Image (cartoon, rainbow, N blue to C red; front, side, top):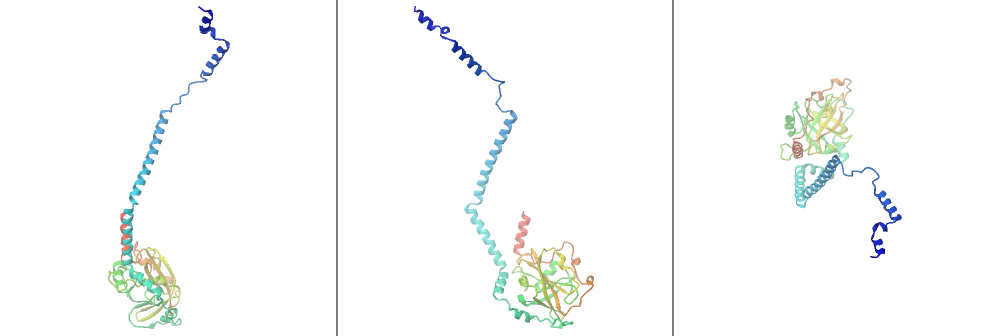
Length: 318
């Protein structure tokens, strides 16, 4: 046997100092430096992660569902039917309000000449006595071609007032009569359904065209009274201050606005200029007022129009 071969095959003889040193260093490096760290999440953290993941998934599903629902709603077929419905509604609204539209268009092309308007109602400011006229009670507003009977209705019941409005405009019950010291309130229709009875459904349809300085003539009890417009405004139906008494003779005209609805009230106020009124120093002696109006009762209105009925339907629906 070769002695050199035995020496090489012995592993103990093949190790030297450098090998031993390197092995010791490796053991020191691989040795843990501290306590073992648990990198697994705690149970409550796992629950939170699952909850978060579930929420994200729900939101994702919710967005997808919304997209599907919206795509079903706003598809071509649905939009087509919606367009037909809206178009039909506009056509019906146009048909029902055609008289008002016609009045406004014709007025815009045939406005009365200012000179003729001023000559139609001539006020003699120095007259202290009312001029005698025919016994028929009338209201005349030359600016908007109004000439209609004036009906006195003592009741403030809306149904009774609506019946009286078929025959003209109505002096509201409890307010001053023309020529008296106080607030004389006159109600008139601005619009109504064309199939409703009466010849004065649109008598105040152009009342919003009246401006300050325009003249209004009232023939009442065979006497002529001339008023000059001093104010125009739109109020809510429950604003009863327009019925308050005044210390001097004042005329207040009330109608619904916009025409075709009873949503708000147009108020035109005019002062008496013929005969010349005497100053009333005791305002409390004036006739009429909001105090006569039953609580919770709004100002008179048109009969419910198509638009009013549609609005009421959707209000009750939702």
